[in-house]
Image (cartoon, rainbow over all chains, first blue to last red; front, top):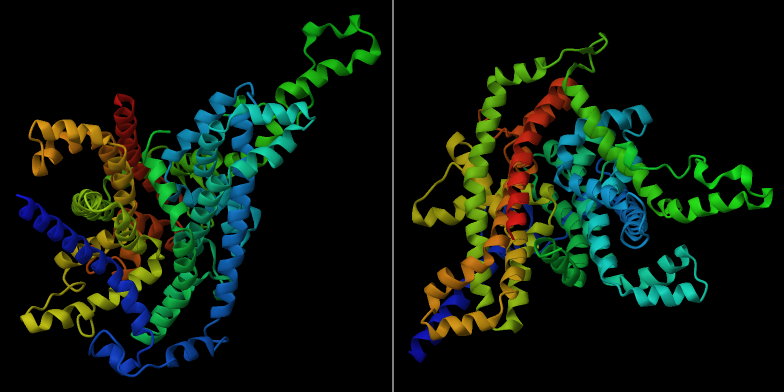
Length: 277
Length: 319
């Protein structure tokens, strides 16, 4: 009995390891293959490169006129950081107002905001495109930054977190003459660092990886973000897998780094969405 | 909508019941001070609400109006109200139905596979020593962090019929698969890639759900002989049901909006076999600039998705 259960546990762990390896393998393969010369990429001769080369990276980074990859990298960083800052600011202010200030009509408003979580953003693309066109923001970073602040997820997440902060701290601060804004800044925000980190990382990665937004709202090649840039450049350098893979590594590296450092917050954020509240 | 949003920037409507005329002039400030105390908190909401109404509520209403209008951006004619004509057109549009069929095929294959794999892995990982659980979860979750362009291009390379990695690996077995070139295989290939790309999210939620089941239930069950497979069927599954349903609905909603995978890997082909509904909306609105018809198609997709969302709400209320 004991032996079979020990055997079963080994079997389970073996299966889990096998699946985990299959899931990570494509990522590792991309990294390794980006160091292969083209001939080795086209004819698969093994997982490890026989001849390590930086040629793919040199080629993709060395032609900024043809492939403005630094420009795309800069655009991606600019947009992702701005979106993250905007979402954290407006969502935390709104969530504080809704969770703590007992506003007349606040409950109905909160319900209205939460109800829009059911609206898939994709179905708003056509009207948002026309609104951005009217504002003259198409083909500018604003088209990707400003509308991102309207999402309800951040308000929802922070609202639930703020609700859980004990009231005594605020009351103590109020007795010391702290204004509402002061309480928000000096009491609520410092206590909410984990929730803010979760939301911030989520927003950053979501914005960095966004494909449909830049695809539709941007026109000029030099305005592109990395994901759209890479997609475009695949169509013009078709079958140049070495370049595509090197570009993929450049695009993925920041995300993987953020992920490996902050995976705790990411996992918790996703797990929270499924549990009560 | 705006009736729920007392605009804090608007001048304070003086509440007449305070009877201003009976008060000394220096007390006039009191009601507005009270007003500020009551509504001043809306200043915290103002930045968000401006964005919320401009880029969520307005597009929602505007999008519905657009769906009732014949709005061709490239045509010199002014957009005119056409009632339900766009919806009628969709009902008779064979491309729309093909796209719906492709989407249904994707949802029908991807959802059971994603959920099945995520549930299996969640239960298996949960049975392992706590110390190693996080590591395995991390590995399976990792692909969800990769942008669809990179993920799509890489899989396109895996699937390539000549230089593709998968066929190279299957060659010793004498197997050759037309991954992306055969209309029947193309959608299967998209689903396979999507399982890899998306299974991490339901896995994380399900594992969190498993952690919430008190061990005392399992201990009590063990006395009655509920171990192994029976433990899963009689204890784990019933207790996990609400979260499982939530994850299923979440996955269905996400799957109906599949776009990036087919756009990058197959470009909708071969023979439009993988042109899903989002892709058709994209083509309609942003290649042919038929904004009215594109909006109508978006709303039809929205109706399908909202139906599943409402099911989800019912499920939640049952909890």
